[in-house]
Length: 196
Image (cartoon, rainbow, N blue to C red; front, side, top):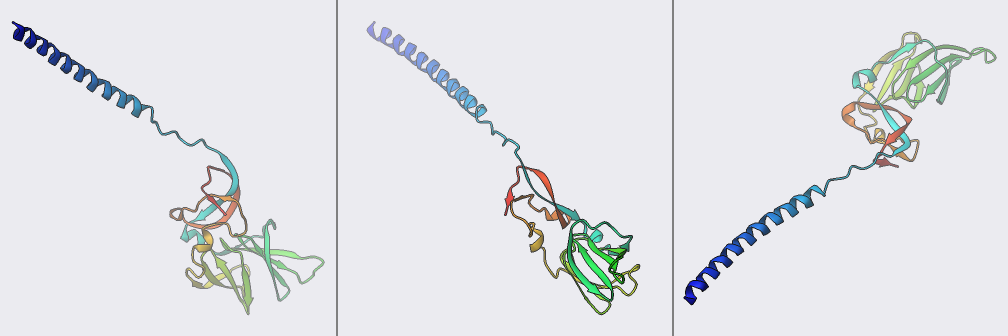
């Protein structure tokens, strides 16, 4: 009799252990799900910083060198004087051509569009200029109809285009898949990752 009672008690304990094991199993699963759902990755808040943003052009746009009507001087760079003419660099845009035969009354004659231009030099009737990563030679015999006569591809490389060389602080990281950097402008940047 005692063995029957013992057997029944063992069966009850075994059933209780199974129920307890099932309970623990579901409890653990629920805890894991609760834990995982509480581990949402928080997105970083957007913080705007003033900095420099690159301006891109395609390589085909970069090679569009031509004379156009005069423009207003906004961000002049280097100045070159030749045969009564002033050649004044407009940073990142090109070169102003000013007839300075009468210094009291200079006449703006034309503008030579050279995207990404910062530096110029003249020898004879050839104007040498940087054009993004390239070095170009422009025939300036006819200032209203200039012509590129030589191009050294990648003379300056893309290293100088990876950051704004003339400024420090935050800037938008360059994405070379967007084209060639021809200028940098001040802008409010969301969470800038690059700094100099």
